[in-house]
Image (cartoon, rainbow over all chains, first blue to last red; front, side, top):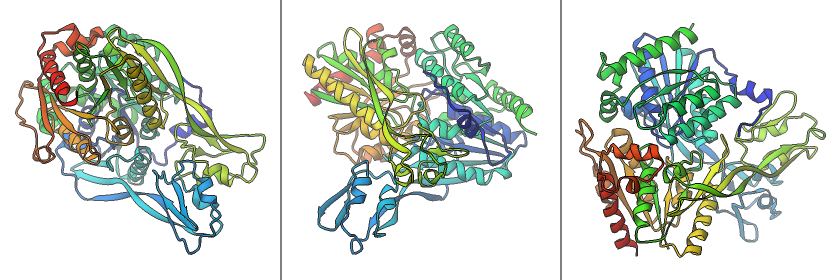
Amino acid sequence: MSRVLRPEVIRWFHAAPFATPVIGVAGGKGGVGKTAVAVNLASSFAAAGHRTALVDCDVEAPDALVFLGLPPGEGVQARVVQPEFFLEKCTDCQACIQACRRHCLLRPAERTILLMGECSGCEACFLVCPAEAIHRGHRGMGTLRTTTAGRLTVFSAALEPGAEESALLIHALMQRAAAAAEQFDVIVVDTPSGLRHTVIEALKGSAHVLVVTEPTPPGIHDLDRLLSLLDMFAVRRSIFINRADLPGSMQDLREVADRHATPVETGLRMDDQLMESSRRGVAAVQLFPQSLVARTFTGLARNLAGEYLP
Amino acid sequence: MKEIVVLSGKGGVGRSALTVSLGAVLAERNTVVLADTNVAAPNLHLIAGAVAEEVVEDWADKAAVDYDLCDHCLKCLDVCRFSAIIGGEEPIILNCFCEGCGACSLVCPVDAITVRPVVNGRLNILDAGWCRVAAGELDIGESGSGRLVEAVRKRARLEAARRGAGFIVIDGPPGTGSPAIAAMKGADYIILVTEPTSAALHDLQRIVDVVARYAIPAGIVLNRTGMPEAGVRPMPAYIREKNHDLLAEIPFDPLVPAALAEGRPVADAFPDAPFSRVLRRLARTMEDRLL
């Protein structure tokens, strides 16, 4: 299933307009513990004295603030362009209707254009209108938030329920974090589940991706697919096995890891304290600082800092 | 033929396991077809123990550059609103982000860009013995899942019609965006699965807001109750306000991951497990309401 990408595309993936190292956290399957890992890793970086940004790119189900028990704070609307028709200028040429490949434009009467369907904001209609009869209107696609607690700053975004602009919103969110990147020593990026383009948008620029999985058949199946994606873009990564004692096959998991030449970093068994911390909305490393969970993430942060931080 | 779609907002709360087991207990009295619309990470078939019988390719429109014609003006790069074109010597289309809108082709002065269909996923038809499964699978890193979700549902209806099936049980995608909408539009009933964690209940609120826009009856299943330190008493006010029924509470049951590891529906592998008993009652509730 892996495709061979042009070297320019791989360079594009790794290009970053800032020097701050980015650690991505991805998982393929939903609910394997991506956000728990991202939140605890970021909290561990912050506790070790690093100025840390956590970017929550799971814009359809944004939970990092919930895991951290932080108030959402004030939001800024992210918008997408939508055409507005100034019919007094319209020459009735219907070029816009021809150009709209989504068939969102309707001409119910002479010199009358209506936007009916789900406009993606592609602006093709603007490009072909000879009379400048189409203006740039906007609609909201989501809300961007920046929340700071001590040395940890969370960049998050919530997609308008039902909207289709997940990837565009992640793009806007990452740009927002990139603009502030110089203020941080490290950036942790949490990603959406599934292996859509949204994961590529979120992981673009990551120096290292922590791949969270569990040894169940669906966990291993999606791990294989995620590692194929990371292979295509030649991304450095390691595997974090969560709930390692779930019934499944650790051997199958290791075979997939070996096939993709990916080291298994560390992991956790089913952990009551990690579960309780996510239930209570406090990072486990803060709630149970002496626990195995806390030591696991502190050690992980130390290793990654040693490798990627100046 | 009644369509039940299972959604959750948050991933990993047990949506697919519930979908398969609900299908299995409904199949004790009805003919059932399952559909997997989580096309970005389809693994319903692993849980249902289904094997592939037929594969149909799926397509999406993407821009393509004819480099013999391209004069490297890069006007295409400026107009792409999806950041799907990168430049350098020559424009390169990032297929994963291309929406096939054709804006680039409109500004190309030498007509070097065309929009044409490209295979970016497939529809798998599988058989589990006790039911047929229609499952969508998007190529890794691809976009445009809404169309494929519609194709999956259409095929599931065809399979159901051929067999005179009473129920189609649809595993929805996680999240609250357009894939979730595509999975639930026109369904007869929506089951919202959640668990008593802050994050799952937060995402439940988001999916409840989405569901509220469509006049489809919905009920909630609270999964994995009674975990070690269960302190959280859920069903916050916003759920009660929406008048969604609390259809079932399923206690945390270690036999669920055990059945998952075997690739069998819980209700089939462990018919007397607490999970299976609740699911059987849920199936009777669905029959009462929908048939």
